[in-house]
Amino acid sequence: KTGDSGAEALKQAIAKAYRTQAQFDAVILTGDLVDRGAVEEYRELEAGLRALPQGIPRYFCLGNHDAREAFTEVFGSLKDAGHSDALGTHYQYSAPLFTFKDQVVRLVVLDTLEPGKDQGRLCEQRRQWLHNTLSLYPNDRIVLVMHHLPFLTGSALFDSMVVEERRQLEEVLAGFKTVERIVCGHFHRACVTQLAGIPVVVSPSTVHAYPLSYRGRQHEALVIDEPAGFTIHRFIVDSQSAYWVSHFVQQSPA
Image (cartoon, rainbow, N blue to C red; front, top):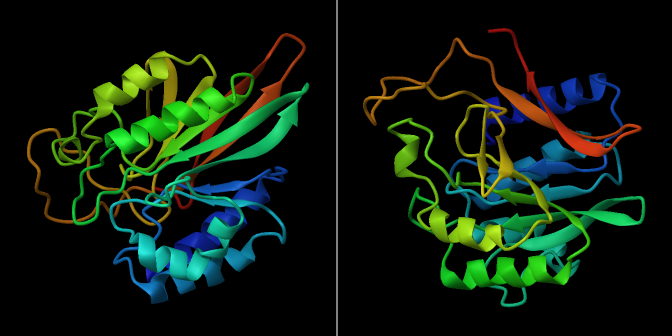
């Protein structure tokens, strides 16, 4: 998220990511991109992302703190480049990341934002879009990106804000063997699970972590003794196979 702390955290995350000396194919922002969904916040985000090397693709996923209209006012040129669904109602799209042995490794970004609500939604229209999009690429290796979690974590607070139609999503995904990984944000903590047999990787927040509480929805303060962080997803090719490995990177010591 943006703001004084968010802008500095973004700067630190970019610097630390490139200190790994990795050659990145893309940067994926899983939301929340900003805090209040204001145009000036998205302009601040755009300015912060100029620290990235020129030409590296940036892929955005909207969260419950985001606002579609304000986002597209600042980043609207992305829609002109085809980063939107055919109906134009939701900010969801697919894009090729790279090619491996004549196979396209493809990103599919799903919009779970429901304005005015913290909980994620995947209405029938969005689920149908996902089904149609996956059907278009039967030979690609798919990474599905969404902000809200499609599973329960055991955290009382965040379990009230997961995707409402997560079982219907699981039914859609069960019909395809091409989705290799699901990447989420929202939780402000790193965690992993699986859905329909697909690994789900949740990235920590670049700004701050939330407390892990299994009993009540309320908490007195944000966690300040746990580090912020981000995730590097690396596609590994060895003599036997090719697969994904995800590294959780802390931005500051705990």
